[in-house]
Each structure stands twice: as C-alpha cells, then as structure tokens.
Length: 183
Image 1 (cartoon, rainbow, N blue to C red):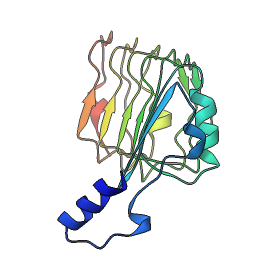
Image 2 (tube, rainbow, N blue to C red):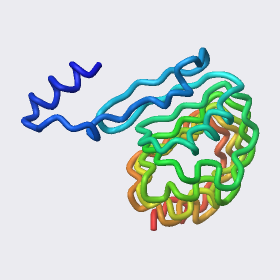
Image 3 (cartoon, helix red, strand yellow):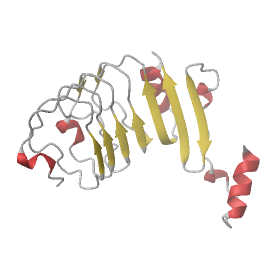
Image 4 (spheres, rainbow, N blue to C red):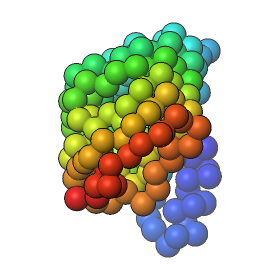
C-alpha cells in the first residue's frame, strides 16, 4: 500500500509526506462486517449489518478524513440529532435500511463537507426537508425507492450546489411549483 502511494506521489511530482495518506482506524481491523480502504484524500468504509451505528460512534473518537461511509442493511430506523457530528464525511450511503425519520439536525456539522448523500431503499414518506436545510456543499442526493409521495415547497432550501437529484421508484403524485427552487 505504501509503495502505491509513493508511486502516485512521484508521478504527480509531489514529495512524499506522512500526512498525505489517510489510514484506516485500527478498531476496523478485526471487523468482519466492514471493509476499509485508505486513499490519499480519505478512507472508504463500507459496513453491512447491525454494527453500523456502533462504528459511527467509534469513528467519532478517531479523527479520520472519510471519503465515503456506507452503512447498509443495518436496520437503521431513524437518524438522530448530531448523528455524524465531529466527522468529516464527503459521501454518506445509508441504503437498504428501514429509515423512516431524520432529525432536523441529523447532518449537523456536515453542511460544508458532505458532497453526496444516498438514502435509497428505505421507508421515507417525504423528502427530509428540515434535515437538508443548509447543506451547502451537497451536490448529489439520492432518495430513490422510498415511499415519497407529495413534494411540498420549498423542498430544498439552501442546497444551491445540488446538481443531481434522484427520486425514481417513489410514489410522487403531486409537487408544488416551487418545490425545486434550490436557494
């Protein structure tokens, strides 16, 4: 792994630096439900199963630049207040759970960091508008295959960076004219 990083750094004409590579947290080494890959711009952690929420709590104790965090098939029903506070997550995947509710401050602390969010194949019945307020950096949002019905206005307040929104495989029957004003 270190050889690969050194080759990359040399190709890019940069000097090797210890801080150039993110490292997988040691508590993930013996995990059978999670995988972790270290890259120059952060780690990619993919977890499947019940340990997802416990992994997040452990990550809060370990300062790590997270390029991608996937918590799938963890039977998560609700994302609580400050669930990811003190974490730096660029891409968050919460697919294939049973999420029905997100606290309005679920993503507090990620407003200027998180670029992509996927909450697909869950049990949402509405766009989690309050949870998305102020997500200034969010560029990609996938809410596909939930039970989302009517879309109220304004659905995406202060999400002006958004360039990709996926709502396919929902039961959308009605949306207000101003639902998609990305202020």
